[in-house]
Image 1 (cartoon, rainbow, N blue to C red):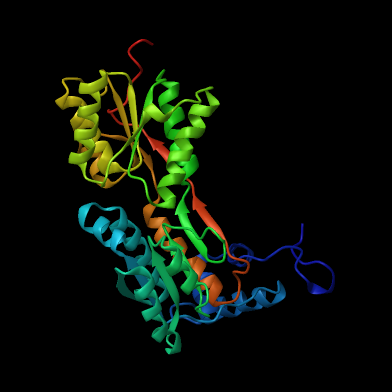
Image 2: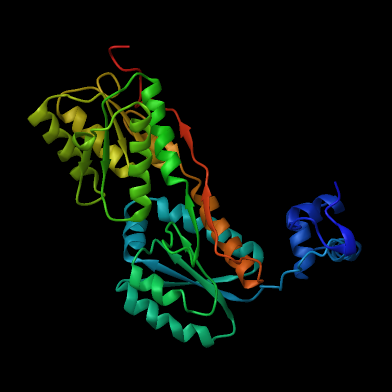
Length: 347
């Protein structure tokens, strides 16, 4: 079916993929041709430009040489030091920016509202195309940035009022498939180990709860274990203490983050039990070190590189006027089976 209807108007929004497919070139070639970048043969550039015009495709403004301000919260910076989630997201972001010839300028955000207000000076800089906010939940900061007048996209966070676009993993469905995987192994008493506070983590809690609800479990308060920080030693202490006080009244643990999973395995082992013989443990993120734990950790893989790259693409859509209304993009997660999970003993 043709994408062009009567009077030359497209019957649906034409995408870059459509232009590339019609011209028989890759998306990167089509993108560089439309952006006027070097390295594209003149005849290919002319073909791509002509196809874009024929399909009424909105040709994006070249962003080469422009700057993007990356405002990173203290939570993101701490995570960057402790483990690799933030580092993996930033790697995907910077690789995409390098491909497009865009400069990323990082600004640490400690006092969220005050520091965000301080970013307003960048609004007058014509070389600044927009802003990426990394792991920022503070409502006062979000309220200030909604009125920036330049595009803002949240990375690993969301705007409850949906006035700012955002990119996250599918936290709720990701945690649900993790819990359902453990249920498929015969586990009924599945602890959820978490640190509360961020909306994205609450979505993971909700996904675990959804899986329990689907099995008719309504009383789950005694299956929730909370810690004060994302440190493995706190998770280990929490699990070891629970077993000491209540016995082994669970057969599996799903954690809201990888560091807590590492701690949960330590806690089970310190209490004299075996992973996965007595207790299965599943993490969420699938950081590179997951394969090197003892035992190697089963986890819910989060596409961290793609989160960073997709956030930049979403921001550039807004820069080119193609991103209204705001969009909330969630990237799919999947299970990675290793050796920290096994069938429940009574199965």
